[in-house]
Image (cartoon, helix red, strand yellow):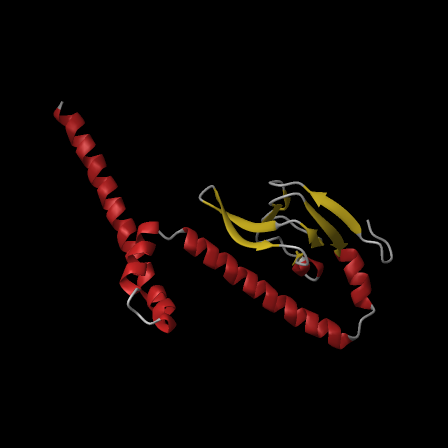
Amino acid sequence: MSSGNVLERSVLQPGKPFIREGEDNTRAYVVQTGEIRAYTMKEGSKVEVIRFGPGAIIGEINLMIDEASTMSYEAMETTTVVTITRQDFQKKLARADKSITTILDYAVKKISKLESEKRDSAIKNFEIDPIADALVKGLIAPVSDDKKDDYKNAILPHINGLLKDLKSLKAAAKKEAAQNSTQDE
């Protein structure tokens, strides 16, 4: 625990989550050295959302609000962090001017929204079939650079859905053919 101005320093080993999605977290971490990634789980796979290097702060939202973490965090290499507890932060915040706490409340809401959007985007990208992505890139190649993202965002979900449906139909046809061949025997 920290007291006064002394903060706890920790060394995190790679691959071991130190904040887990869905669990309460009452600490923030300032990355001194190394690299950390935030991820969420989808279909049994880790979906990377963002990476953090020296100077980044992780879990700062948990210093202000009591909610479960929306992502898991793990070191990608041996990483040194400084820990700030909610208790220490709240003590310091209690001495701050009301305008400071109002600004921090607003900033936390914005950060929380941005993190949620980044997480949703990472999950959406994870669900994109690589063939659909390649097809759309080919289709929009002649489009001007300033319009490519708009075209990609408009077309990709439809191409991706079409490919998923085609794969499902193919799998169903294979299954039906296999059932028919066993019935014919």
